[in-house]
Length: 424
Image (cartoon, rainbow, N blue to C red; front, side, top):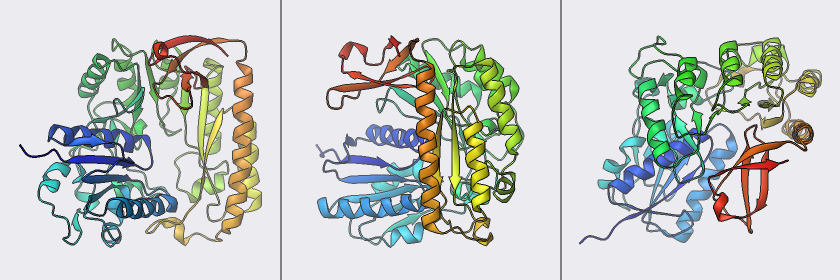
């Protein structure tokens, strides 16, 4: 009997990548591969890449070098956004055997069957315009909160972003399939599902080039609220212009959707929002936050912000800082702008010096810390339900309240994947 081949995965980037890595792992296990931890020796290493920032590119290269030192005879496969955007660049990295673009990542098993170590790196990619179809993905057994992919691609063209070039046009699963997946996850004991996608609010566009919305994200949210067995749903991230009043009102009265929104802002300056080609002004963003807090004062709101975008003067950065300071948001994800090939932003001037970008990043991270602490203190003395995860680290376990306050406590096996009343 042939010995089982082993495979190990490493994921860079977003929640969507985590769900897709899990799907690839299940596919290869069905093909007879034994799944191993990434730090263990394996016959095949698969790196699912991100390319939102320059750091993700560098990290991919560092990981390949690490594999080469530890296990030079192993196969190394690179997929994900970096693989779609720069396949030849990746193929030139010593030790890389296979590069799979967006259309080929889910055909990984057939590619591995034909791969031989020692040949020059094979590239299997295509023009992103040719990418269609939708592949359901979810993470299970990787963490208590399961990421369920319901949408992929993006029809927006923000001036700083490579994602449409890496993932193609906006396309979605249909509500019937999503409900089927949610029920299957409930049967596996999953308590919380995080809905993921590149542009979630654009849900409803068909996978084979149908550009009309046959269904809407609002329709999806309403349908999922009736799924038995799932205790919690979260919306991973949704554009402010697609976060409708109806969605907000529904979540406010929902049995299962948590009082937690993550809404990308990117800048608090209308001048910069225009340069970024965002589809809203800061006034709309403020209106969305105000309505959420009116209907759900306890709701957690996160925001993405980019600092150091070309043209961001000290005055415009101060505009962003002051706007965020005034907003009733709970935490920030702060990104330092980095130049990405083939984006419109490369032609915008003046360029912000790198050291200034880092200073601004630090200022907003400090603001985020203060907002997090303030939000937590607002809920001191309340009792809220916490869903505890199964990871034990240094004798401790972690979980999140409904409104996304992180709780850490000594590990108790009986609390794993359970909802526990917790006094904050």
